[in-house]
Amino acid sequence: MFIDDFVRMCFDGFEQGWHERNGGNLSYRMTDKDREDAASIMKDTGRHIDLGFDATELKGEYFLVTGSGRYMRNVPLAPEKNIGIVKIADDGHSYDILWGFEDGAKPTSELPTHLMNHMARMSVTDGKCRVIYHAHPANITALTYVLPPEDKAYSRILWQSETECAVVFPEGVGVVDWMVPGSIDIGIETAKLIKKYRAVIWTFHGIFGSGADFDETFGLVHTVEKAAEIYLKARSAGIIRTITDDQLRLLGDAFGVEINKDFLD
Ligand code: 2HA
Ligand code: ZN
Image (cartoon, rainbow, N blue to C red; front, top):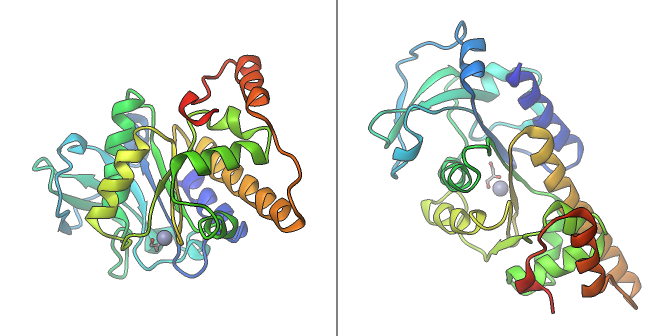
């Protein structure tokens, strides 16, 4: 059942140390089968909430989402209080709560960025992308204090820090320089970048990752975080050599992936 997989991912992120307090959030766009599986628990709760932006492309879609102010650590203890299912209304500007969010909870403060990212990734993946994940991994965030806020700088450093990276995210990663979180504006800027990159880093804050399923999305964020950790360790010790651009090209050929040429010298 998709709810179990969702709950597992919330707690996996907590165990990695990526979700201090109420940090981070997760959303999943449900399939027709998921709707059937959840039919017996979904009902009209009478809770209809305005979105404040246009999500017409998502009208009629159902999402399982983490709650605002709720802790990832607590999700397995009481899913119905900490997460919930919403349906985007036909007007495209509001949604209805159909399950969960008990005791007055509501969807994450980052709902604008989640839904805008869903719209962006749906359009470029032919509807395959279903998961958007926001986390606060310490090494990714630390990296934002030592690099200029440029997609190329981050992509190259991460590719060079672990051989797997250029294969896992050959398009690179995007970076949004500091903005107020939870806002519609940060959603717009993130969604622009997530059309090009599956992962987008927020400076001094964390990362958004996307993917077709929970494993792929968690794995992407995990890979970026591991590479950031390796880079920071190597940089602290003193870097004397790294993966070359020719080696990155060889990886692309060997694994049949198109490594973003704009970021190769
Ligand atoms: O949910 O992570 O960006 C708390 C946050 C805000
Ligand atoms: Zn955050």
